[in-house]
Length: 241
Image 1 (cartoon, rainbow, N blue to C red):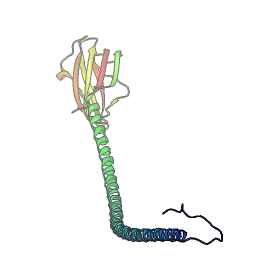
Image 2: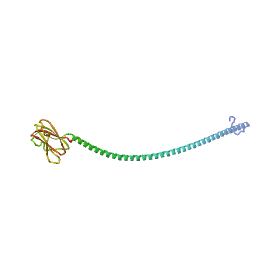
Image 3: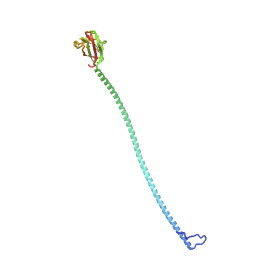
C-alpha cells in the first residue's frame, strides 16, 4: 500500500484519478485491518488454548498435590500408629526393667545377706583355725634360771596354772645329780598329786632333759627337786593332747 500519490487539496474537488487512489488506499487499509483482525483472532485462540492447557495442568497439579497429601496423611497415620506402638512397647519395657530391677535388687539383698553370713562364718572359721594354730605353737608358761631350791620345795610360787588343754613340757638343767618330781592339782580340786619324772631314775647334772606331761585347762602344776640344788627350768604349754 502506498499513499505517495495523495495530497491534501483543501476544498478543491478531487479528480477521478485521485478518487481512485483514495479508494485503493481504503481497500488496502481494509485488507490490512482484516488481516490484523484475523491475526488477533488466531492469537486469541492460541491464548484460549494456552489457558485451557494451563488450567488442565493446574488441575493435574492440584490433583497430584491432593493425592500426595492424602498419601502423606496416610503414611503419617501409619507412622503415628507405629509411634504409638513404640510408646506402648517402651512403656512395657520400662515396666519390665523396673520389675527386673526390683527383683534383682531383692535377690542382691538376699545375696548380700548370705555373703555377710558367709563372711561371718569364714571369720569364725578363721578364728578357730588361728586358735588351733596358736595351740600348736609352744608358749612359755613359767621359768627360773640358776635358782637355788630347797629339797622337796616348790620351784615356782605360786603354782603354774595351765591356760588350755594339751601338754606341758619341762626343760630341766640341774647343778647336781638328782631326782625331779611334778606336783599336779587337777582343775576343780585342791588335792596335790606328786610323781617323779624319768621313771624315778636320777637325772645327770649339767645336762638338758625334757619331759612332757598331759594336762587340762585350769590344772595347776609345779616342780620339786631332790636333794636341794640350783636349777634352771622352763615350762612350756604345747597346746595339743
